Image 1 (cartoon, rainbow, N blue to C red):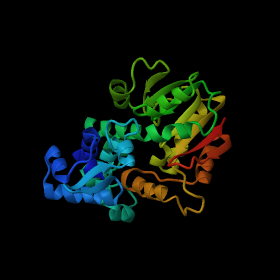
Image 2 (image 1 turned 180 degrees about the horizontal axis):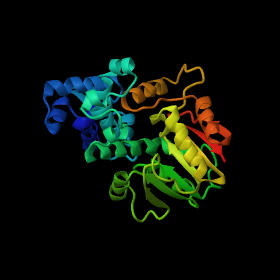
Image 3 (image 1 turned 90 degrees about the horizontal axis):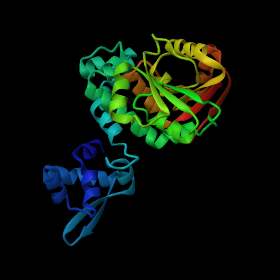
Image 4 (image 1 turned 90 degrees about the vertical axis):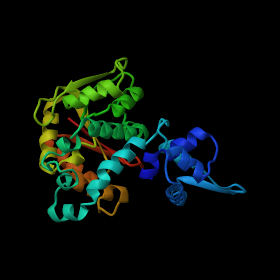
Length: 321
């Protein structure tokens, strides 16, 4: 799947508007006919392509799932996250045995950069940072609305999206709650790229705040969104951050955690179990149960904690001050 995305197989088939032979696809993409045929057949096995036997031979076309999620031009395209997984995540997973032995991320082995600062490693070049931000944006294009609609957030007019990155979740938020404003709080270089590449200046309801939420102050707001933030860090770092958020939060305000929740007995979901291993090879964090997130929120002072499972990849936990 990663290779077919990288070579442009799904884009070529979408643009052609008709099924193509493996020779035509190989020629169109500058690849070997022998290699392409095997790749296409494997994609058929994965239900990413369909094949039709004709008098001229085998003709390949995209399945609906590929048209929707794997072509670059689709509004729900996951192409960027696929490329991030292919070029970055996949390499870290080669050292899973080392990660399990040592209990730490594998950036040093995979890329020769320090493991001590996960985001310094993740953002080790402008190109890498852009890939990561585009990848996260593509996730919110299909999961954002579900987590933001899990609770009625309309009473919260002033919202801070901590670590809001490329702004896709903020854009979903102002689209769903038109009377709210969202401030994306992130590192200066992330904010710069978000402004240049992802969030239009015409987007009046979205503003930016440059800072490092562990070391800099967090401004007052009614609601703080932490989407896929706490899973990057150990419990002590999470407590430290949530305590700062609680202090900054207006009375009656709240915090919305967006995370992939493990079952209480840790028996699943399998995606979340695998994500937790991914946190091991890439970050300092882990995936948690709803009870574990509730405990972290309570330790910071938040109460009235509610949990909503969306039935999709990410769930929502709301705590109030």
